[in-house]
Image 1 (cartoon, rainbow, N blue to C red):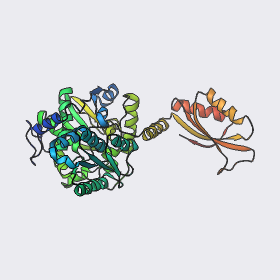
Image 2 (cartoon, one colour):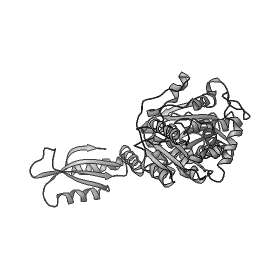
Image 3 (tube, rainbow, N blue to C red):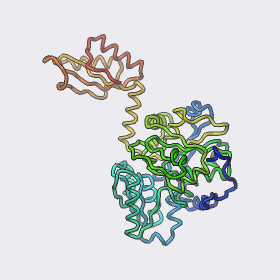
Image 4 (cartoon, helix red, strand yellow):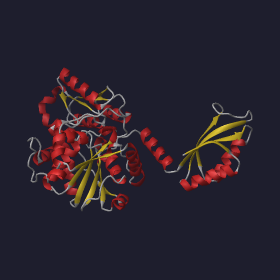
Length: 421
């Protein structure tokens, strides 16, 4: 990595493996012209104050299909020409599938996609809506890739790899070209990393023109393949693990992207599931942006303190995608409310007679809490024949208000079966 072995080459020179340089990235950007949207760069005062330096967000979650993947898919299909007569096929956690489906439709090419059985419903439905035939197979992206490759060989279709392909990497690099125009004062770019295609392309594009800019990749603990692979000098797999950052849940980096990141990137950092969840809520509450777990890892690295302050210049956090199920987003938000003391769950004993529940709810209303859910519990507890238990879920204004509600309930004589936060 340049951070360990000197600066990356400048002036658009190709990499040692002779496949990708600035000219190829510029050609890929032209292939996406008119379809790829130039996504905005948004300032964040809160993140800037936390980091002690200017921080901006590259909102690639607002890209068509909801992620950066469209850039690489268009570049690849455009390079194929008549080879696409039988159609194209890909394996993906979802974002690459949507991108290939969109690109194929825009170029009049047939498309099939293979996704893991547990792929988010929103991503499955989106790929189908774009005209792709969707096959759900396997428990992870690697198994979906294997199935897609077999289908390509069987049907004479062209297989489009989600990251380990020179044209795909070049297409993703068009994001780096945009940043060079949009943020001329940038000193560091922070990029989510799954298979490594986005970091590879962005790093080549930026460092070819600005070798002084730091390129930092972020992985999630459940699928942090690059640290061990870089140390070993070859792709190393990690056990399959569930993660809310499903868009970067890749078990093994590609040979191409590993070599590119070794040469062009400066650092790889790893964040936890909890840090990613908090980053998703932060972006929703503070920036009004819906960002999937994979896209939020850069913000997670900054908020957790794992990302050190750069020497100078603006820090760009790439929000690589926004395709997240509403159910998962709600779960993450509820978890945040609980951990921040804005959600109270309690079980109380009340007399089993008319009016008892109404009295309890009235007291809670007077205390200013909002009741979300009420359940009677008559089994599994040691109850007197003339009493019952109720479980209450309440929204409060924070830890101090939660303590006030609890205090008023105790002062009113309500016995607690258990208290929770």
